[in-house]
Each structure stands twice: as C-alpha cells, then as structure tokens.
Image 1: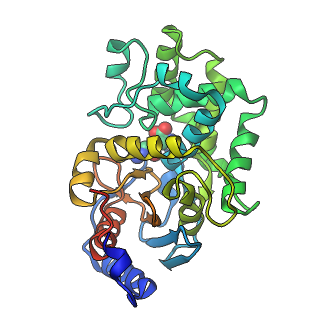
Image 2: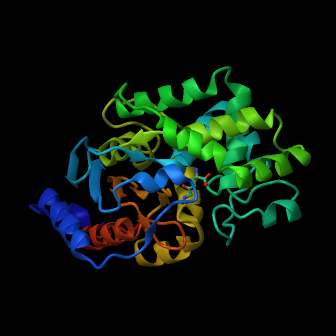
Length: 312
Ligand code: DON
C-alpha cells in the first residue's frame, strides 16, 4: 500500500491541515437530539487521531476532548461476546447489511427476531443480552475491558446521557421485546437495555479510541502491550462486518469512496481500521441523515486518499 513508500511524509501537520479545512467548511448536518442529552454538546468540535500498529499516536484539533462513543461501543461489545460464547453467537445475529436505518425495526419481525448484523441497534441489543447473561456484572466487565484497552482508568459513563437514553429508549425497548418474543433475547429485557444504554453512554477521546482499537489493525494483538484481545480470525470477521455494515446505510458509499472498515456513532465519532497500519478516529458532532458525522467523513476521506489507505 502507498503509505509504505511515503518516506518523510509528515503525518501530524497533515492531520492539523485536515482539521483546519474541516473547520472552514460551510456548516452542514445536525447534532443528534433524539437522545436529548446528546444535543448539549458543542457542535463545532473537531478532533482527529491516528494510532499506528507501531505504537505511534498522531492527533489534531479536539482529539483529547471526551465525547459520547454511542455506537462505537458496538465494536467492543461484539468482541467481548465473540470471546465469551464463540461461534454460537452467529446463530443469534447475522452478518449481512440491513439496507435500513440503524434504528429500524421492520426487518426483525420478518426475520424471526434475528438482527441482520451486530452494528444496527437490534444487533447490539442482542449482544447486550449475551453480555448481560454471561457476566454477573456486565457493566463493570465492559468498562474494565475498555479501560484496559485504553490503558487508562479515567474512562467513565456520562450519567446524563445514560438517563436520557433510558428516558427516550422506547424504540430500543420495542426491539428488545420483539426479539424476546422470538426467544432470541434470553434474559430480562430491563437488564439487557440497562447494559446496552450503559455501553452507549461511555465517554472517550479520539486518541483513546484510536489506540484502543489498534488490535483490529493488528490481527487481534494489541501492539503496545502485546496482549491478545481476540483471535486473528475474529479480528478479520469484525473488520469484514464493519466494511459492509459499520456506516449503516451509507456503508456502500463509504467503501466506494474510502475503502476502510469503519464504524460511526451518533455522538459524532467515526473509527476506521487500516489493517496492518493503524486506526483513525475522527469526531465532530454534526451528523448527516444516515447518522454519520459530516466532518468526520470528510477528514477520514482526505486522510485515506492522501495516504492511499484503501484496503481494496
Ligand atoms: O440506541 C441508540 O440509538 C444510540 N444509543 C446509539 C445509536 C448510534 O450511535 C447509531 N449510530 N450511528
């Protein structure tokens, strides 16, 4: 790939340039407000970080400001569930794109309560059921997993966001009950939703997210600690589903223009995995109508183009 031949290319100034260009663009998109606490964020924030498998960290803009990770948590929940129950997971959640918005419910009834993939809300709620029933304290297990990956015990849940998620989570509750009616959700729905809302409400920074996920760019092995986080096969599988479903109903366009496994969250974060090289995390709260950060997409596109990062 191109980055191997770009000797002498200065990455950090280029990240700063991308952030500067993004800040100068005409305002577009809208901060998520269907979870009211998310609308409290400063919409003008722009952060960018790149962590490499060689252990280097480059960043620019608001890359050390915490934000709500929201659906980025679905990657970590999935890795925990794969580690915990192995291949039986794939009988309860599939690996196909949904072709529908992230919070759509319609497919679930037609498809017997089995979500299309782990990155739509229904799929992540199913994963939350797995975690809630296989850990006696799933909240604690989840936050400990993230803290270990980030190498920091200073990662917390935003209690306002958590309460707001719970108060405005009727659609997620409907999906959980529908899956329960098919016997796919096994545990108590309140407990499942509690875990799901908890993991969505974690705050992290671009720098923490990029470095925490480097194991996915390194066949499951965390480069800095040399810890095995998941198997090589599972790292491949997570990246494959990210490629087809991580950017929701814009995943095809993202593959077409950028060509990287990636995941977005309605807090405005996007992470993109560059196998063999590293992980990019971009953050800016204004979202397009698919739920993907407008400036985050813009910056990742620019970085991938400049460094020739596409996996295709
Ligand atoms: O359940 C929800 O709707 C949110 N807590 C998470 C959704 C999300 O981040 C979708 N991403 N684009």
